Image (spheres, one colour):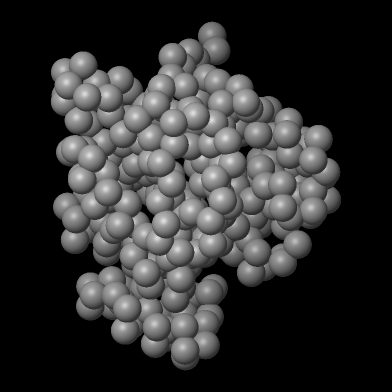
Length: 256
């Protein structure tokens, strides 16, 4: 069983909207062992696949569904957004957007920022989204691009949850990366992301993007590097698992 860091419901704003259920995971619970102990949800890191599948099943159960209903992405630290109508693995995208009921959108990370969105559309089905954002994603603006795409498709009253990520003090980066973030983003975003000398605080930059878009997300979890008991961190361990976020519109029922 996966033990979430937090879970909840994106409540409908407009009449006729469905709610969406979300959860944020760390490394607690699950079936993996060793470097992947114990709630790793990634198949590409060297963990036993049977354990990963069991953990993905536990992740899906957090929002009232099964593993076969998950939509996973293979991110490339870019700006591409995948449209999701059914479960599957979506290659070369760093964001997923869906209006489909019964599909769980998943974003993973082990220092990068995982986050989920919910947007009401009135008489139309609401939209949900999952996004993966590292320093390159911050530089190209994947979070803002996703918000704009949600709005292009009619979403309003957008809600969001931001998962755990490495802080700027623990994510020292060479000057070329910092310069790229500074040159590629607006002043509010670069100032927030580069406030730590020699570091990049991707989550602070993401929060600045939210502020510019008038959205106040819920933030879950601390620095991945500083919390080895609860969170995976690639920077800290190199060989390690991935935690994540999930969002789904489904008939979720809590256990009594």
